[in-house]
Image (cartoon, rainbow, N blue to C red; front, side):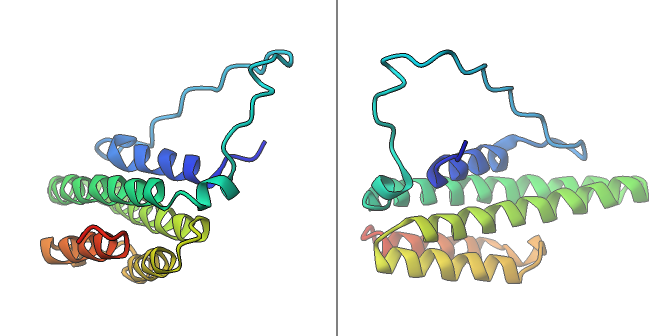
Length: 162
């Protein structure tokens, strides 16, 4: 079964917003319920990537939520790294792995949304931001308040909000 890209982004945003805690491994997502036999409700049309690509506002809203969640994650990860610095090397390594994974998830979400949208300006902004985040390679020290504010500003401008 193929999950629409916007649903994937929503899942990534949920993970960024708190799917991991401390140096622990990510929390497992709840198992999907078993698929019942075909019903009339299942035969109704569900949104597809193509339908969502025309909904720039929905993509912009998701991008905004995702970047806001990432900003909160950066703050949490700074605390995590500081605490891990006073602990064992194992704790430090787990913290760095989590930080790297969170940055990769954010980059993936931006790039995924850029592929989904049909709006050329939004597509370009999301792709550029995704590439910039990827280039930072998990170094959250480079995600200061100015960079996060600039990121939001770029998204807002592309989405006609600023």
